[in-house]
Amino acid sequence: MDKRTAFSGKLLPYALLAPQLLVTFIFFYWPAGQAVYQSFLLQDAFGISTQFVWFDNYQQLFADPAYYQAMMVTAVFATVVTVSALGFSLLLAVQADRAIAGAGLYKTLLIWPYALAPVVAGVLWLFMLQPSLGMLSKGIRVLGYDWNPYLHAGDALALVIVSATWKQISYNFLIFLAGLQSIPRSLIEAAAIDGARGARRFWTIVFPLLSPTTFYLLTVNLVYVFFDTFGIIHAVTHGGPAGATTTLVYKVFNDGRAGGDLGSSAAQSVILMLIVIALTAIQFRYIERKVNY
Image 1 (cartoon, rainbow, N blue to C red):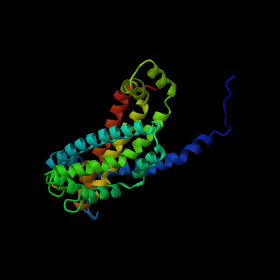
Image 2 (cartoon, rainbow, N blue to C red):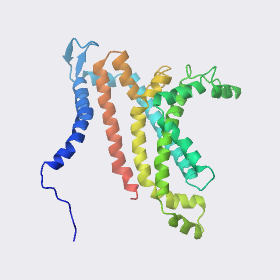
Image 3 (cartoon, rainbow, N blue to C red):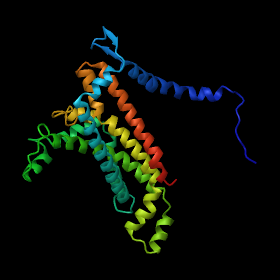
């Protein structure tokens, strides 16, 4: 017979849910609602005068070439960082999952970057790739390339991509390693007995069983790229040179704080929120079909 736990008090489930619902309302729904309302307003930087302008902020935004440039930068940045972070972390997790000498130290060193703040990760790579004093930049100059992220748009974008990827690899590595260790060894050993080589065993057995983990990390990494990389860009390039590293989230901050255009900044935040929600919905609608639970 199926035994179930029953609570006599009808209010207990609501009381248990109330703290989480309250936190969600205060820190998500309330700020999101304020951003939507403010996107229809035109006000000065001091908040003294306010005028309701309907969709004028959105119309001006979509007529601004700089906004489309920020979209393109964000698309390139998000794609490269997500693919690179997932690829490198999966490779490292596969290597760490093997029975090798010093595996514990190897795993510990790979986890350390996860403890760093995004700003610190960006500053570390800026020190190493500083045009005149950086250790890595000197090696690049020896190869004959004029490395200068302060002047060259491609160099600046490459610098923030490397910083953001390196920062996220540790988190992905932890999740991938946990997923690999949950796969029964008997399946892999049976495939090896049948003559399947390492690459074939990985793509036909290991990777399909990792699909739930990969799908989860894909969603998390996209959210990370769109929002959490703000600190890296602000500390390393400030969106420059000439907007080459200005992503959508950094443009929200720059236009609102530095430019004083609060209405446009609120409109940009609403659009950014809709983009992330749409991308997440697409992932759950189409990509999740290929996930084997």
